[in-house]
Image (tube, rainbow, N blue to C red):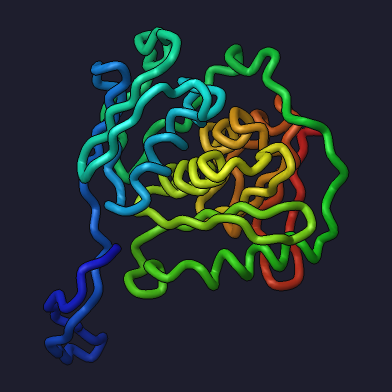
Length: 252
């Protein structure tokens, strides 16, 4: 979502100036409550909010599937989620900010929480599938093309069958929305590839691992934390996906 017709002064390197209209990405707070307790406030794009709320709970380890939810109420600015079984939110929120901004300063991952967390082992996909998926990511980045101010994520099956895409001002939120949409529609995430526009940090890769997604790729670079999480959980990690090449990252 973006706002059209925002007045700007465009200044050239020759000192020239003109008044023009521009499109600006919209960011608003979105509060997630779990069993009437405040869990997180995300600064996000105000669209696909159900996908964001449920996807965030899945990728943050609050739920393991949609079946863990007994009731939900989503509206602009707020989500109220009720679980079938109680969860210790204090433990999940340990060392995490209650308010997650678009800067997403949450990239450090305690490696001890990865014990026992493994994705299903699969064969590497045909490189053409990765290239086609990144092309579809770019094609579906409508808000980014209009504003330059959003991130994108997309889910696909191994056979290059497109499933879901999402955009958000936050790169973590975009992933949560794509994963949340896949979960809502009942797609088997352990048979999917996740592509995104943001760098592959540890907490970004952890979101894929908690969802059971075995392959993650990005047009951007990985961080060392992302490679460590991928190694520990068995995720195949691809970065710098361009028109004719990409890199696979391991620590071997």
